[in-house]
Image 1 (tube, helix red, strand yellow):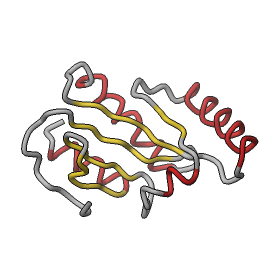
Image 2 (cartoon, rainbow, N blue to C red):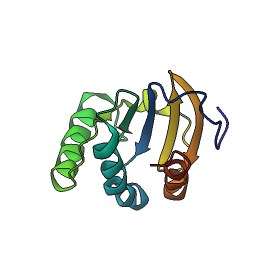
Image 3 (tube, helix red, strand yellow):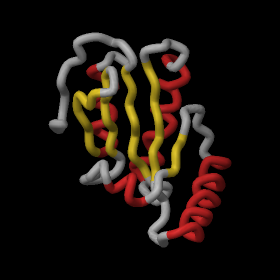
Image 4 (cartoon, rainbow, N blue to C red):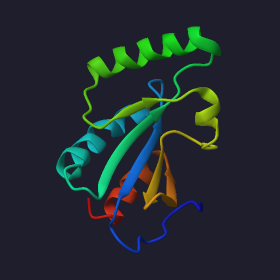
Length: 130
């Protein structure tokens, strides 16, 4: 996918996976804004936000268990309504993230663009009129 924007041909089954980390201040700052957008628009069948994280560097089950606990503790203090998935490091690495947060725009399962950093997320929301 190219960085930036490819205008959607339709508004069907569109989503914005957000790649983030608990240790990332810009990620944490954008979460309330994304949550507000999600709460206003998630009831529509054509829109979803999904948080993806991999908050662990240790491999194996011990690292994954520690990451689950860290993310659960973080989310108990930072309430968001949109779903959060914890990916194993290899799965997360497949996204080839340049910087955090990174927001992907998908339409009918096709990546139409991606936005890097909190300003990129706000640019995407602005372009979508959200």
